[in-house]
Every structure is written in structure tokens, then in C-alpha cells.
Image (cartoon, rainbow, N blue to C red; front, side, top):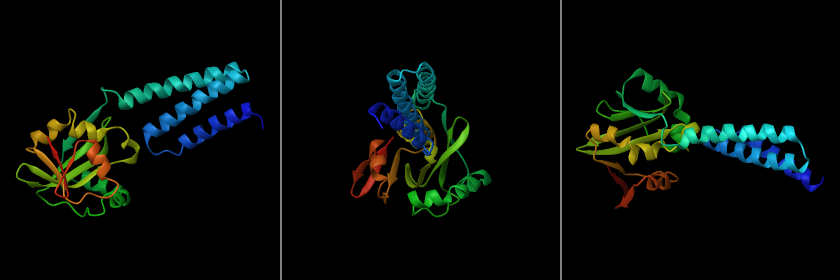
Length: 202
């Protein structure tokens, strides 16, 4: 094997690995990187079809990444009743993953505040908690793995989506028992540690 072939193998490996990603953003980033390396490989051969094909792949991935991470993403958060059949079906379908991320999550109470998180008109996650005056004590903050890198949380807690929480009478979001591995994510979207709990003022 010479070094030119090695470049081709690296590009191929990245493309294959990208297909195993559950995150849309990671899939696109790996695919784009693999296509960039394939362009280099095509130039080293040289092979015009390889260069043209992968240039097109780069453009497609860049367009989708811009759509996924840009300011005009189609995100939403809809208040929903804790006992709504659609919500219950969604939670049941993702129960195993929710249990891994929020092992303390049990069942929703009648008075719980619940939002269904939306991406391109389809359910992408759910947020739930107990009201304590104007504070919301989170019991669930879940986004499907496909959209976990799409910055839905930043949109909700620090972006335009915060108005949905405010319109629901929520001024503070509190996480009393941060789950290991989830704490960094919460801090990234503005939560601060206060006496062992994480707090976000809206």
C-alpha cells in the first residue's frame, strides 16, 4: 500500500463511520470530512469523477449542516398535558434511552408542566417538571439522539424558545439531582451551581 491509497482508505473509513452515527450533525460532519479527503485523493490520482462527485457531497453536507445549525432552524416547544396519549406514546417509545439519561424519571403527575420539543414539525424530545411557584423543578429534559447536537436546548433556555417557558409562568429552572454526564450539558446552556443544585434564571 502506498500513501495515496492510504488517503483513499481514510476517506472511505470516515464515510462508513458516518453512516453509523445516530446524530444528524455528526453524520454530516464526518461525511463532509470524508468527502474532503476524497477530493484530495482524486486530485492525487488524478480522477475527475472522484473530485466532482465528492465536491457535490461536500456541498450537500454543508447545506444540510447550515440548515441544522443556522439561525433559521424550524424548532418549537408545545405545552402538552401530562396524560396526553401522544406524549405517553412518545415517552414509551424512547423509554430505554430516557432511563439511561434520566434514571430518576418515573411517571408524570397531573399538575406537571410538560413541553413537547419539535424539530421540523416532528417530535424531537420532551421537557417536564414540577411547579414550585415560578420555579420549574426538572424531572425530565430529553432530546432524541438524532437531534442532540442540534442545539435545541440552547434555543429553549437561552434563545427564542425561552418565551415558551416564560409564557408558562416559569422564571427559574432547577435541577436538584444532576445526572452524571448531564451536568456539563446543563452548564453549557447557562445553568449555575447553587448549593448542590443547578439553576437557570430565565
